[in-house]
Image 1 (cartoon, rainbow, N blue to C red):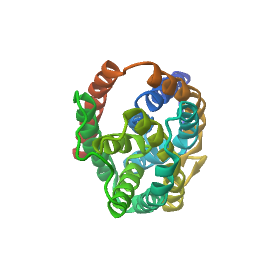
Image 2: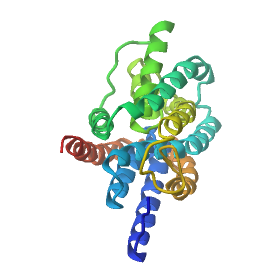
Image 3: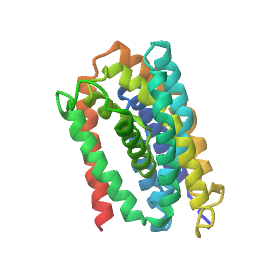
Length: 275
């Protein structure tokens, strides 16, 4: 597939991705929602702008976002670990189920058309926006449920996160908080979920998109190596900055502002899935 751009288009594309990557890195560390919640819609609209085939735009946005989450999560997790906010015991218990769910999502992606992936992102994104805007977290219990239920929860988080192109924080933080898990520890531990989810999910998207027709040059399955190279330096650099802010600030107003942005984005993605 031959994609050519004018100099102005290149500046807009690189500038747009760079700005989105900075915001994504800060958001990933600050709120624990995962930078993919910003990167996926931006990539989707960029790919649409560059005349990607409709059936490829969302798949490549999701897969490329997951590829960037690998290093972003490492940087964010290290910053939270320095603050003692990563529960490695919980991470070890949840990691196998998270990874299995994520791999299943990546492999299954080829059987879903773009409208399904866009719709999943829109619906879950809207739910996350509502959760962020709510003054108090929904509380289901005073402690985490028994092991079999935790395995089921982790598998679902891995599967849905994979299909959305996001790290584990977006679903992991509100889930842990719902069981009265300390919020800073939830954000720190969920930052590590992204590593466990992103690696198998990316492998799944590479395999499922290996023979997909119409992919642009320098693509590995559904992963755009060019977009990954642009995004990674910014998200990796700014994720620790966001993590430090998370421990220095009470990000109530940041959460509310981001929830408005996310709600608008989710509605637009839902509209795209229905048209």
